[in-house]
Image (cartoon, rainbow, N blue to C red; front, side, top):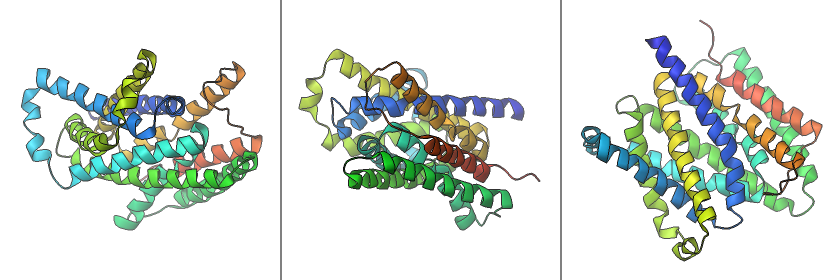
Length: 302
């Protein structure tokens, strides 16, 4: 049974990685017709009300447990995820999906680092090597991307500061969620988290602009809301059924899909979003970042 549960967790983590790999590109495209805060409000709204509908019509007994889920950690998790969403989207807007997907790998590194500092976990030589490799990879990739920024390098640096904030807030969310899912069902935790985040962005949504969108544009926004529901639903199940280190390794691979899709868009000359230039040294840095992240979160053999 334990092996079956872990397999389910691995599959859920892989599904999350795929959804996140595609999402970065869709987010960049959506910013061409709507503002960031409205995008996030719709995403959380769609995810919250779809999940709420599931509980109302199919699982009312679990819905009654929401009163007990209301603890300090649950609102904090929702608030941290809200910060992560706006920070990530601002970073994508100021730089690009490929750049953000590589640099956001700070998340698993910071999550592992919190384990060493907060929980006094023992760091291994392989993990130290992973940190060094990731640091080298970040430096190479950053240098490569900076060399291709022909205008306003300040915007690029600002975008990467948003990436850092996105990584820090996601780590805070992940820690809260890990504790919460030990006691309550993952989807019930997500329902509360979505509700908190949805409430956070309601005052900032541009309703007049949303009312003027075409059916296609509204469909794109709703699709991203569905992506949120499925991705974080799968992540909650993954963390519930598989070790966190294994989930982190799989999630570290999602930038590969983003880079492949960006390359495909460029080959097909589909100018949905501005093309990002990555030279061989940039790909080398990206590879080093991903490899280093995997080494850091890799579980030590007993």
